[in-house]
Length: 504
Image 1 (cartoon, rainbow, N blue to C red):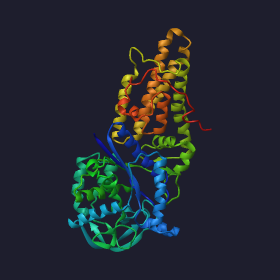
Image 2: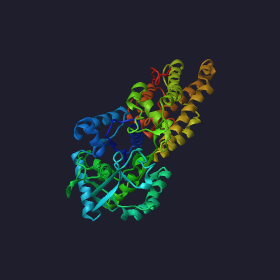
Image 3: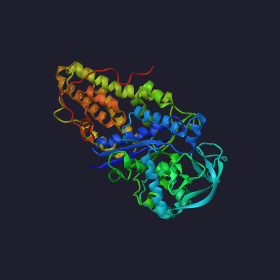
Image 4: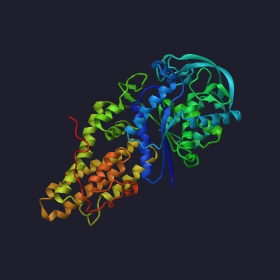
């Protein structure tokens, strides 16, 4: 059985989750669900990043210990994963003792190989992104991501010989042009390397909230090295047996563009140093924008995903995230845009189509799916092409493109209703076979839509299958079933409330 390993970045717990966290988690879930539909062995990892200064400072502001703070925040991130209907196989915490063990083993290995050394250092440091910046990287003298003043940090730290891996990294990028997706991000990552790599600090001396350096407990591991290693450590202890040999390398690391350098430069260099195969793909998505700015807890311009889902439903939220914003690009989100998509596409295009189809089968065929046409259907070839498009698109994480392809088919089915006018055919007994053909095609088309849309709106598609007379079994949702004519004539259709009640 083929395998598929997908990860989100682990989310930082200095504050409560927002829609950006939900966005990446849903994307990973869409890919994980799709690959399960293909019959593959899937491992989907998400979790929380809990060490470092921001978490310690957030705890201090609240008057609690770092341990108390992260334990409380983790609950909210677990709730978010459950709320968006994510099917992650494991939720990792960087405070897990097993993760700590892996981190210490990993950097000890690099130290023993001579890839880590001690030196004094001073640099401009952003406490919010836990990163050092050079003067050329600043925007008006401030952090390019958070827009805050940087502090000059002077310490004696342990450094990783990142510069030694410059040529090997470039060779890998040359040999794997789809290592970073989209291509613009691949070019950006290459430019980081071609401009010249400097060795990086992998420890902090003036910080207690972190993983102790094994050979020098007076320092702690730099939070970004600690965090990146979750992709390996999670496989080590998520199940009773170590899953590393089964699932590594990761097929997709998903992340936002602000952490590109850590994942596309530092992470592969660390893996090379330790003798690991590199992940197959890094997919770098853009920012969700409100008011023309990236959503962030620091700026306070966040959209509460829990409130949106409570009001409009989980599947509607999942759909909107990838219908409104092309995955891989920046995009503007708003409640107004959400409601427009909801009414026009979920309520009208899909929900109304299901209701009309089930009602017409009930009225004209005694609620039993009619037999297929004797001479085949014009839909057969287009469905084969659509199924191949979906598999190809999601194989390269083109989530929005895939959704658009399926939605074009939804619209074709709606057009088929209007052009064939079953209510007219029903009035002419001599056109009974033509009526049954149209209704069969509508039911069969919706069955295929349900399969192909399942990764996006899972609860809704299970309900669609139930209304079309199919048992709520995952076997019915496998991609192999998305072939024209695999439906079961005679299945009893069941009416129900609107899938997506229109918003006033």
